[in-house]
Image (tube, rainbow, N blue to C red; front, side):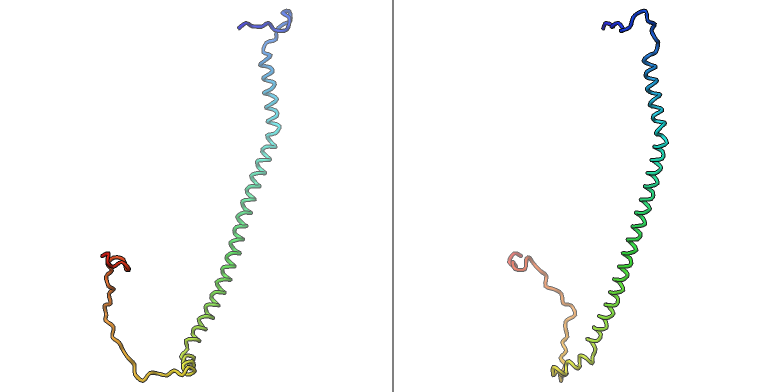
Length: 140
C-alpha cells in the first residue's frame, strides 16, 4: 500500500499527537457528561427503590386487608350455618317425637299388631361366588 502525502505543506511544522489529543478531548467530554448526570442517576435510582418498597408494602397491606374481609365473610357464613344446623336439628327432633308419631298413627287409624313375628336370620350370609360375567354365565 502506498502512503498518500498529507494535505499541508512540508514547510509547516508537524504537530505531534493530534489524533491522541482529539481522542483525549472526546473522552474528557464524555467523562464530564457522565459526571454531570451521575447525581441525577443516583437520585432517580434512590427514588425508584423507595417507590418499589412503598408499592411492595401497599401490596402486602392490601393482601392482609383482603384476607381479613374473607375471614369475616367465612366467620359470618359459619355462624349462619351453625344457626341453621341447630334449627334443623330442632325440626328433626320435633318430627321424630313419639307424641307426634302417635298422633299421626291415630289419624291414619293404625294400631299395634296383636302378635309380633320374629325371624331368625343365619349368622353367615356369604355371597355366592361369581364365575364369569353375570349375564354370560356359560363362559365359566
